[in-house]
Structure formats: C-alpha cells, structure tokens
Image (tube, rainbow, N blue to C red):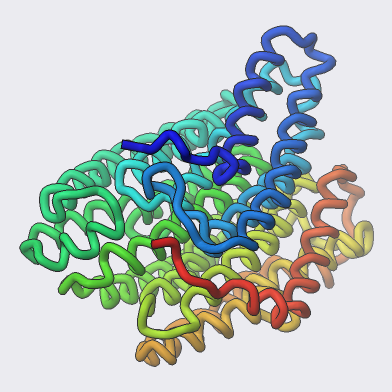
Length: 471
C-alpha cells in the first residue's frame, strides 16, 4: 500500500494540469461564451507553472513517488518540460480558431487531460500506471481528433479509436501476461522476476505490451491511424497528436527497455532495431508523393519514430542512449510543431501547390518553413541535426552500425519530399494573396528560432540530460 507520507509536490506538474482541467470544466459550465477564453488562460497558466516546477524537481536526486509507481528523475523531468512546453505551443495555435466556439472549454479540458496522460506515460514505473496513462492519453485524444464534427474529423476519430481500442486491449493482455510471468507489476521487481520467468511467456507479454506503446508513438506496427487522423483533424490537433503523445510513449518505451526488459533473454533490442528500420523506411516511402501537407507531415512523423527508436534499441549498451533520446525528443517536438504552425498560419493552403510563390508574400513564414522542414531532415545548425548525430553515435557505440547505415540512407531519401514542398514555396511564381493567421505565424517564427537556438546550445543541454533512473 502507498504510505501516508507521500509528498504530492513530487507530482506538482501533473497535479497542476489535472487540477486546471477539473477547474476549467467547472468554470466552463458557468462562464458566458464570450469569456470561455479564461479557461484557455487557465490552461496556459497550468502549463507555464508546470515547466519551472519540472525544472526544480529535476535538480534534485532521482526518486520515486507513491509507492514507487512513478519515477521522478532526469528522464521524467525532460519529458515534463517538453510535453508542457509543446502543449503551450499547441494552445497558441488553437486559441485563435477556438475563440467563440460553443465548445471552447471542452477543447482546453481535453487538451490538458491528454497531456496529463502523456506525463503519466513518461514517469510510469508500474505496469498498471502505464496502462492508466495509456487510457488517459488516448480517450481525450479520440475526442480531439473528431472535435470539428465534420466528415473527415469523424472518420479520423473513428479510425484512431478503432486502432487504439484494439492495441489497447492487446496492451492490457501484455500487462496480464507479464504479471503472470514476473508476479508483480513494479518495474524494479519485474527486472528480477522476468529474468527467472519462462522466456516464451515473458516474450509474448512484452510484445503485446509494446504494441500499445508503439500505437501512442505512431510507429510500425501501430502507425495505421496516423495519416488519416492527422489529415482529418484540425491542424492544431494534428500538431498535438503527432508530438505530445509520442514524447510520453517513447520515454515509457525507454524506461521499459532500461529496467524490466534489461535482464531478460528476450532479443528485444534486435526487434526494436527492425521496428526502427520499418518505421523510418515506410514513413519516408509513403511521404514521397503526398500532395496534402498534413498527410505528408503525418508520414514524416512515422519516419521520425524510426530514428528515435534507434536510441531505445541500444538501451543499456552505451552511455549515450539516454541523452541522445531525450535531446532528440526535445528537438523533434519544437521542429515538428514549427512545421505544423506554418500549416496553421495558412488555413486555406492544404496542398503543396497552395504554397507556390508564398515567399513573395510571406518571406518570414517561408523561412520558418524551410528551417523546420530542413530541420526534420537533420540539417545543421538545427536541433534535429545534433539529435540525429547523437542517436547515430549511440547506435554505433551500442554495436548497431548497420542500423546507422540504414538510417543515413533514409535521411538522404527524406530530403526529396521535403524539397518538393520547399521548392515551389520559394521559387514558384507569385500567387493570389492568402489569409494568414498572425498568432500561428508568430508561433512558427518562435519554433523555428528555438530549433536553431537549441541546436547551437546543444552541448550545454546534452550535459544535463544524463543521470540515473529512479530505482
């Protein structure tokens, strides 16, 4: 049982987000429509206050909270900062479109609950808490995907839900099997229990569990929902779905690999390497001839999961794995949100052709698009460049040189479809003037600048990302 001396301040960022969601729901029931923006301000305040709280908690020693089920360590701290900061950026993209909407409060509450689920995934050190985090991150996200209640949104929500429900049941089956194999749901105790358990039972349980984690990450084989859900939902929601849950899921995957799976005879590292190759290759090949910009970014985010999984594949085999994964997650989050911010800034531009000649009207916006898209490729001095360099170094140091070669080939190949978007925007003839959202454009400028600054300050940031996991 959980002791009565547990300190709720260990979970202050999570408490702030959950309390803000509950309070916002109550306020929304009483506030007139013209003042629903106050709930959005409350959401921004909760996320803004959660970031320094996460920084403060990260400065202390690694520990656990509430019966050892939640880890408070550098991995959780980094995920908290990235998730809360990313949610703030999504909020900035959504607010202009949500003002005056009769369900404005509902949107902010759902956003907070889904972000809180991602936080739970990142810090979970117990299989039951991991399953609870999966549900909390998923159910509000289904509602967000279909929030517009139009045809594409309804289809997006339905496909997202069907795949999530199927893999969620599979994940719960994995939890049950691992409980039977290890006689516990606690990660540290599972590390010992699974080492002594029948290999077949532990392997089947681990595969089923990882299916659910990969669904939240948007990687193969749980990627089927990504293109349709991203294309059918609003641009702000698409930015959220392709970024925030991914941070929590990949952090959870790393913790699973580092603790309960570390002492088993399951060849999980080779499996993760194969999934990394499948994700980056499928994502890149499918993105080659996409015309819809949201669908292109959807396949791009699948390919990015492949690069991120490289660090997970060498967990425990090198000292570079943790800092490589965490830095890449931060770099990917700000760069991907920057690309989606450009899409949000141009609500009338849905295909690559709609961006033709945009540089003549909005040179700063096109510059931000170029920085973010080339950043996703891994072009210096953007943050993803250093993130990929760290991940490649970790994979090579961990004995997966072949994986580095495959990833390098995929990186070069990905340049093709990003340039298919950039070229007409930069060099195309002038086109009729387009409606531009000022708030989203400002967010795109900030995200692009942050990607470059994070890349230039990478040495300093990498120095604080290493640290022991909570025992």
